[in-house]
Structure formats: structure tokens, C-alpha cells
Image (cartoon, rainbow over all chains, first blue to last red; front, side, top):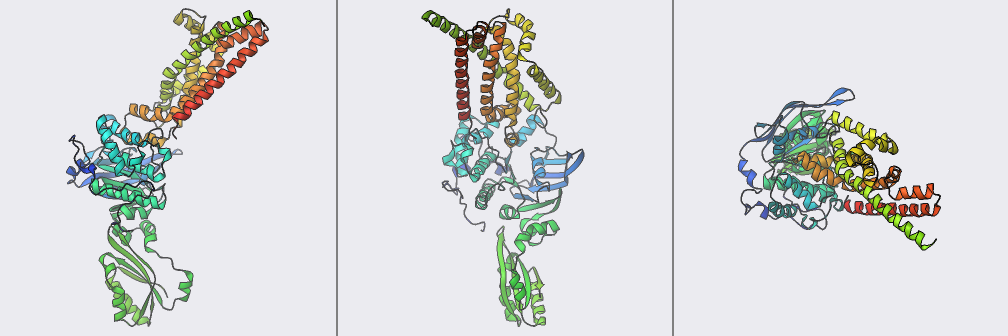
Length: 381
Length: 221
């Protein structure tokens, strides 16, 4: 699915979609508080800066280093992913941003302010500007959907009228207008997460932390929730940090990504680059699903010529490389398997070709293809 | 049984009922007012929570255990001097309510702590992440999420109190249980004993059913 696909909620019964120009974005009649206010501060570069963060946990009498010397700069307004297998320390890193987890060493900077040692009232005031979405939703079971959202506005000391006005707007934004008076236990997983998202953005945060937001959801709901998060990020310019163990999630919504393994960041960069040219073994493994294509055993056995794996990147995926090759060289090319997907609207493709012809022609064709696309290698024969 | 006997039994029974309600009512009210805060203190001073305090946690737990491990009849006798100072007498339902309240508060505080432990830690963490103050977390998360458990605990406490109040009758506290012991046991009036026991069974049933219903309504999980 490309990113241009309009947002559609996957849950039956919630017909709401996000209107292009929501009431929500217009300045409130009361004046001072509305969601567009963070945009004014958009010009600064990094919203979050983690500097040499280490987190140790005591574990069975020993010290367990969950996070080792992690430094990340998270640019304003982007969706920043942290990916890694479970136990890689990504959740711990995320939780240092709002100091749910105090780092053992290192500094946490938000908009150039060191918040690492804030406590009490000061820490709570910072947290008001940082929304958080949880894997298991963490809604208050004995409060209605509307009261769950109202609760975080109450925390921020918002006046009663403003809460009464904004809660329905927020629920409309996430497509749950008809669920105001329902208790969370009556909602599906996707709907619960929508409440979680409405709650997380209720206080107009500058930062939104998403801790495995779709890991408890099925595939279809995952897509809808990610679309919603992306829409909110683009519409409200909230810097979003999202962690996931699934590259598919990162691929779908993140602009940049940090790959973690055993408590360390092993690679950072643009999501497209990470997928197109993973540098670290862990990254390559995580991205493998995107780049590796399983061929049936039968095809490998019956292959008449050489099997060539071609990796397309960027604009080259749109060029007619294959037809040019066939015209230039005395070989036949047969596409056995392949796909092209779009990451951040840039194409990334993998093809498995069967090349039939003389060895020298195939070798020449291969070097020609290499010259035109990112990567080409003989994988069989 | 003649009419006169029946009407005197009825008069005794209704007087005993009023006394039981006084004792149970006072103790129950104090359980809510003192037991809930005490249970909350035990919970939030535990490891990893926002007012973590080992000393308060251990001392509070010890105090409750001392009260709870003392047999109620002994507790009652031990508290007689304090009751005398507080109420000016050791006779009557009000005096009996002193030791009953002490026992009930300790009992209920543990049940409150248990209910709070059932609250999803993720919900507490979410409130913390959104910048809630400890008092907001107590009021809007802990008490609201544990409300069904608190109500169930209150039902259990009320029923235990009805049982304890019979023992309080020994020092002249009065009440339904006391009536059963005095007439039914000491005076060999088996019919009186049976009637009072039957009334107590009905009373306990009603309290249990009412408590369950209220707790169920409060539980939206």
C-alpha cells in the first residue's frame, strides 16, 4: 500500500474519516490553546537529543546493562523509529525521553533543555508536553472513553469548558465519535488504541512517544492505526518516536530509524537507505523480509540459465533496465520473482531473473545491469 | 408460645438489631475513613511506587499484623482501658465499637492494599507519563480502578463485623449475637437462639447480595 492511500478506519461501525480541514486545526474561539500552536516552534532542529544514555538494571545480584551509551538526535516533526528484536533495549530508550526510566548515565535534552534531573512539578510540566501511546493501551477501565481523554486534560489543569469542547473533537479526529460514553472493555483493540491516541494528543504535545503501538493488533488494524499516527504527525507536526520489533511498521510510517541490538544503536539513518543498503548484520536481518525472495526448490532445480538477483533503488526502479539489457545483449531474461515497494514514496525493488545465453553474454549483461542499478548478483548457476 | 413472650422477644430482638447496626455502622465508617488511607499508604510506599518508603511500609504492615494476629477477644480486653478513656465507659455498643473499629480498620486496610495491587500497573504508568501528580493518580486512577475491589472488601468486612459484634456482646456490647448467647446459651432457650441465628443468616445474606450487586455495577472491566 502506498502512502497516498487515503486513511480509512479498519473498524466496522466507525465511519469517521479525518476531514481534510478539520475544525480541530482552526484556532479556538477562546484563543490561546489550540493544536496548531506547536507549529510556531517548528524551526528549531532537534526536538529530542539523547546523549550517551546508559541504563543499568540490577538483575539477580548483578548489573544488567540494558542500554549502552546510546546517543540519538531526533529531528523536529519527523516520525523517528527505533527498531530491534525484543530485549534490545529500545523500550528502555524510549522511556528515558519522558523519564519514566531514569538513565544511569547520560543526558536527555528536549529543545536544548536538559531535563535529565528534573523532579516533581517541573518533571510533570515537561511530561504534559510529551504524549505517550502504549502497546496495551493502558486505558482506565472504569472511566468512559470520553472521561479517559478528559482525564489527561484535567491533569494539565484545563478548564472544564475547554475539556467539554475538545474531547468530542479529539474523538472525532480518531474516528470514535459514537463511543463517547462507552467503557473501554466494550471496544475492539484498534478502537482502544484510537482512544489511547486521542488521549496522547489531548494536551497538544510537541512529542508523541509510541511504545509498540500496534504489536497487540491484527494486521489490518495495524495499518489503520499507523495511518492515523502518520496523519497526526503530518497534520499537527508532532515529533513522533515509535518503537517496534517489526520492520514493516517502521517502513510504513517512519522517516528515520535507529536500529538497536543488545542495548546499543548499531545503525541510524533514513528509512529508505536502511532498507536499500543495510550496513549492519542486524539491520540486514531485519530488512531481509523486504529484500529476500524465497524461490521454490523446483525452480532452482530446473533453472536453465543463471539466476540473477537485482536490487533496484530510487528512481532507477522506474527505468526500463531489463528491456534495455535484452536489446543490447544476446540473452533471454525471464522474471521468476520480484516486487517493488515504496518507502517514503521512493521505490525499492528486488527481482530474481533467469538469464539464458552464453556465459560471456550473461557476464556482460550482468555488468551492464550493475552499472544501471544498485546491485546485481548471480545467486544460482 | 404466648403473645406476651413473643412480643418481649420481638422487643429484645429489635433492640439488639439497633445495637448491632450501631456497632457495625461505626466500625464500617471508620474502616472507610482510616482503612482506605492506611491501605493506600501500604500500597504506594511499596517498592517501585511513587512514595516508596521502606520504613513506613514495613512499620505499617507490622502494626496491621499485630492487630490482626491478636485474637479479637484479647484485643477487646486489651483495649478496655483506652475505651474507658475515650468513651467514659466500657459497656454498651459505643464502647464495643472501639475495639471492633480497630480490628476492622486493620482487616480492611489489608483488603484495600490487595485491591490496589490488582490495579493494572500500565494504567498507573500511563497517568505518570501524562504528568499526573501523586494525588491525581490516587484519586483518578487508584481509587477508581480499585473501586469494585474496595466495595467487595467492604462487604467482607461488614460480614466479619457482624460476627465479631457477637463477641463484643461479652463485655456488654449488646447486639443480635449477644442476644443469641445470653438467651439461647446461658438460659437454654433454644428457640430464641435459633431465631436469632436465622435472623443473622438473613442479615449476612442481604449484606453479601447487596455488596455484590453494588460492586458489580461499579466494575466496568
